[in-house]
Image 1 (cartoon, rainbow, N blue to C red):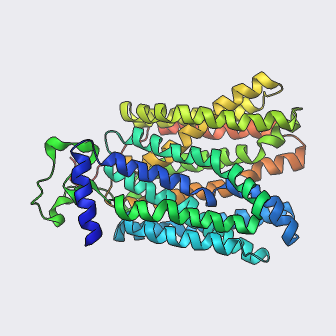
Image 2: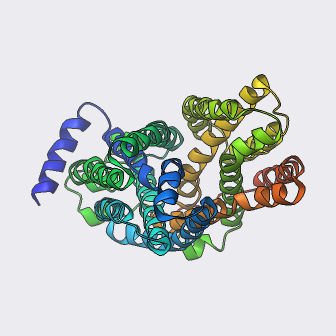
Image 3: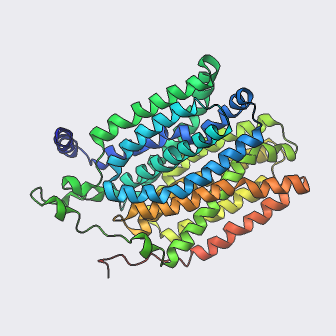
Amino acid sequence: MALAHIRDRMVRRVQSKFFYGWVVLGIGALGMFASGPGQSHTFSVFVGPIGTELGLTGTTIASAYGFATLVAAFCLPFMGRLIDKHGARRMMVIIALLLGAACFAFGAATGLIWLALGFASLRYLAQGSVMMGCVNLVSQWFSKKRGLAMSLMGLGFSLSMAVHPPMAQWLIDNIGWREAWIVLGLMSWGLLIIPILFFAINRPEDVGLLPDGDVHEAIPSETKSTDRTAHITGLTIKQALRTPAFYILSSGMFMLSMLVTSLHFFQVSIFANQGLAPQIASKAFPLSALTMVFCMPLVGKLLDRYPTERIFSGGLIVMACALLSVTFVNDLPTAILYAMIFGLNNAVTMTFFSYMYARYFGRKHLGSVQGTGQMIGVIGASLGPLPLGYAIDTYGSFGPMLMGLAVLPATMAVIALFMRAPVLPGES
């Protein structure tokens, strides 16, 4: 009760100056950053030290990582249902506590099985559950401005890409890889628990507000809490699964996740296969990240302003262009062009994953719907490297496979134009 009283007073004070949803957005961005310990860009720094100490090959570690990611994906719908039942705020506190503990346990790994369990726990809690909770929180607070809000929240992930790998490397060099995970666990607790406990609120209706700060329609403070959320609509996961939109959307998300992961995983190898030095490939990563940062707010504004189906289709075309453009990389200028296209593609993918499910299926059961959709995307990510790995092992070249894969998002882009939002309960 004391925490609730503090939050209510704080909301009133903030709301007198600006919409409290922007505070929630800040928490969401902080959560996206704090998901770093469970993201691929952080794990990549630890592969060498872990393999050396535990006597495991890179292939063995990668296989354990891929399998663990797949297992974690199938658990995400369960977390989505828990978020629907108990609220994102309560679940995110629990997730944060477990995430810190998982970091400690991962740093104590002694063999392959322990390592695989650690991978699965971190992927499920950070890359899956923390990100899902952030998306749920911010989606509840924004509707007309949801695209912009989600793109701004995604900047927290971009910051994690910039900060976590060099920080992890510094920790490994100075205190060791096991001790580094203790620091990462403590950081997870420090970044998440206090802000969520004191500042996060599940829905604007819980404090008498409406999404986007529509104060002219604000809910009277004397309204019972059970009545404040009566107007919130949304399909259950069973209802969503009966709509064509869910399958078109999920197929597109599966492709984006799969193909983005494959390009991330093999970028250095693709460049080398086409005669470029590793230094050029490494320089392409920060350029892509910088392009992503600048493009994400633009993608969000486009989603708020134009029909979603057209923007979704356009994003799939960008994916196809990224796959095709990398096959033409043979010098620094073409590498720069590809890096910028791929950065735009990363901005599109990150914003879509945060935005789409709330847009098409409403807020009421967003956790379970988002959990199932995110599961499909993570499955795509776990399978992403396989086609290109097969191509280089079998044919000694990536080019033909990359061109063939580009057909998939290009075809889905045409199908996406025919996607229509289902009618939500209470709508006519």
